[in-house]
Image 1 (cartoon, rainbow, N blue to C red):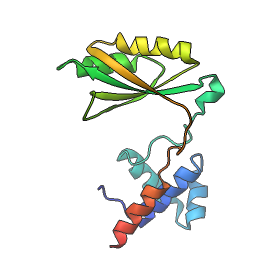
Image 2 (image 1 turned 180 degrees about the vertical axis):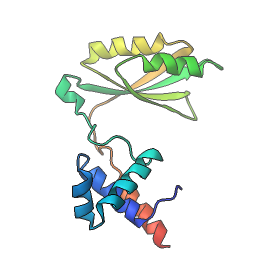
Image 3 (image 1 turned 60 degrees about the vertical axis):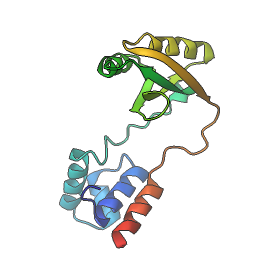
Image 4 (image 1 turned 90 degrees about the vertical axis):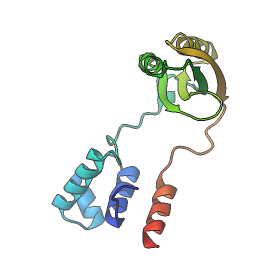
Length: 159
C-alpha cells in the first residue's frame, strides 16, 4: 500500500463525496489549512491515488442504454496492438488484463442491442483479438464505490 495516512483518507472521502469541491472549501470542511489541503490533493493526484475530479458522466443521459462486459482472448504476443486498437473504439470504457478464461475484460456501452452488435464487431476487428464472449448487464446492483474500501484501509491503519 502507498503512503496514505488518516488525513489523506479524509481528503479522499471528501473528494469522492464532493468531486467538484474547491481547495478552500475542502480545507474548511476538513478543518485544515488551505495550503495543507492543496498540497495533499496535489500529492494524491501526482501519485495516482485520485484522478481528475468532477468527471463522472451518466452515459444513459447521452442515449447509451446498454452496458456489457466482453471477455476477449488475444493471440500470444499481440496484447499491445489489441489494446491500441481497443483504445480507438469510443464505446470501450475500460479494459483490464485478467487471469482465467480470456485475456482482457472489456466494459463497453452501446445505444441499444443492435448497436452493441456493432461495438462487439469493432472489438473483434482489433488486431490480435481471437474471440470474445459477452455478458450484457441487465441492472446495476452496486454502483462503483470506494467508501467501504476507505473504511477498511483506515481500520488497517489503526491496527
